Amino acid sequence: MRKIVILLALLSAPYFGHAQYRWDFGGGVGVSNYLGDIGGKDKTRRDFIYDLKVQKTRNTETFFARYKFRPAISFKTSLTHVTIEGDDSLSTNPARNQRNLSFRNNMFELTETVEYYFYKSSNVSGRPGLRGSRKKVDFRSYLFVGVGLLYSNPKAELNGSMVALQPLQTEGVKYSRFVPVVPVGLGLSYTINRNHRIGLEFGWRWTFSDYLDDISTVYVDPATLGSDNARTLANRNPETWPTVKDPVTGAETKVKPSSAANYGYEDFNKNTGKLNKRGDESNNDNYLSLLVTYSYVLKGKNKFYKSKYKSLQQRRKVVKRKTRAKF
Image (cartoon, rainbow, N blue to C red; front, side):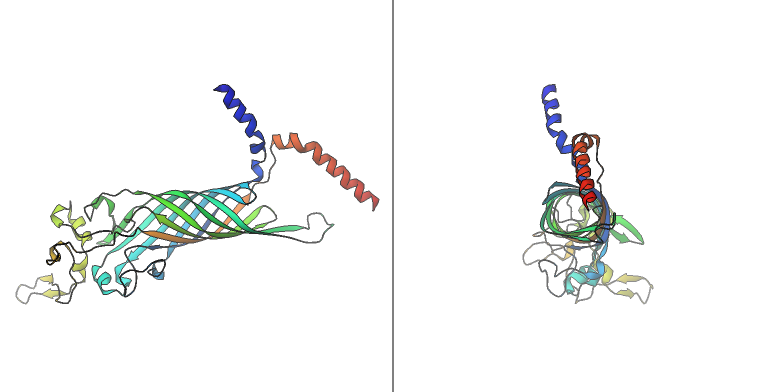
């Protein structure tokens, strides 16, 4: 076993010898939005970005390390904070509007992606012949795909405080806060003077959960829920009902109008015997982001590189000096 380890170390020495020329480290800021059970206009549900609510665009931040494995392929590890929100009050769909659900989710995402550079262009500007006057600009466009793990913690506002929804099991379902994701997208970058890289990246995340917004299936019997908060946040339709004051006692109560849609366990469809729909479990929740990034490209040479290429560099300098002397 020891011999195998030594052999692998010797074989990988050239790889790590050049590694410092291939790394860049950086971060970025941008915006994010989500596609799930909240949003939309008059129609019930539409694919892609047609249910997106621009008003609920929120912030996102990222830190990453990238390694250039081949001239056209890089690997990137990213840690990203993503904020998404949704609110039925912004929907023009009457059913969603009266459902009256809302949420906010501060998520943390760890991903590993592969970037494929399908277009590359280089340009050198400056006055040749003057040392340090020539600047190189590299432009690249790339596609990326990968895998990741998301920490999700949806919350809703209740009486002025944000309440975590996952422990309440508002639909009687115990779902995990850790969600696998598949990131895909498109990006471009400018590398200036070989050290400073500025980029723009659009990313889409397919997730394996329909509970980023805590909404997925149907209303359940309130008696099965474990707390008053759970019962209140499971069905917020009564909050939209008008308040009526008793002329005798003066007590104020919420009264369901005859035109109100049926929501909650009590209002199940008596014709079919099925519970009222709270969400759409046929599609998982997704989210997207747009980031502006900056990274610094490491170009330092290690001892291995110096010992291997020092003599070659010296010979090149001698050739350059001789060439200049002739003129």
